[in-house]
Amino acid sequence: MFRDSAAVPMIVLLSCAGFLEELSLKSRAVASLVACVAFVWISHGTARSAELKIFASRAIWTVLAEIGPEFEKNSGHKLNVITGLSPDFVGRINVGEPFDVIAAPPAALDGLIKTGKVTADSKTTLARSAYGIAIRAGAPNPDISSVEAFKRALLNAKSITYLPVPGVPQLIERLGLKDEIASKVTIPSTDISSELVAKGEVELGIVVITQTFTTPGVELAGPLPPEIQFYTNFGGAILRPPQAATELMRAR
Image (cartoon, rainbow, N blue to C red; front, side, top):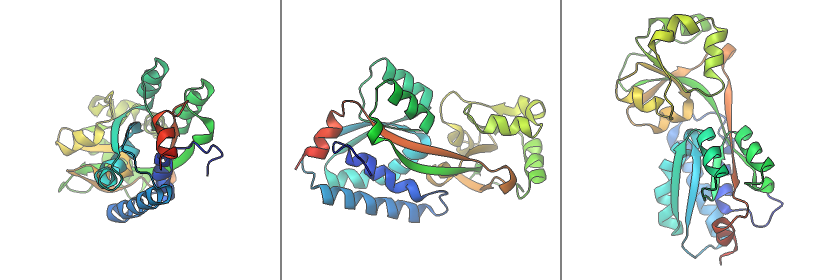
């Protein structure tokens, strides 16, 4: 997988999520990831305790939130996971904030590789997630089975939320709904759309599907119709020089 022998096992851990083009069963995904964690750490024989500071996009953070405690228990290593939007991570890294691993969309990683902030050889694909509609747990499911039904659901909703990242805003504009729903759309500056839905502050959230399986209080009403479905890819890379990540790889 890596040409650089200093590549961190944490990246291998996360890359086990690469098979998840869509998370359809949370328990199955978590079980598979835990199995990957066990394999990586047994095969590397890592024994010395260390802390890894990880900048992670929400789709990866939600998976780490599930497997992290078991990983820490079995490995003796601590995960300090910070979630947010990738432009914020890039800004913090560019001003010199220390970290070990970043999990973000490939475009953000490519920029950091160009500036020499992360190692090109450590870049790997972590996950690919489709988009869907999040509703508060127990709320009635809107009909989003077709493009027209999806449009009606948005027009009938009292409130909607999505993030200001490439994908959803362009879809809304392409469907001709931008002006019609503008007054009831909440676009948070941090990745809290699912939480707003869980609290009942917003009726519908257009989010990556992974979030609906790992955010308490929300349910997946369904994926976007196939004709308008799109995917967000997430990748990972490590700090240059690897620092703590390299120590973990070399520890015996």
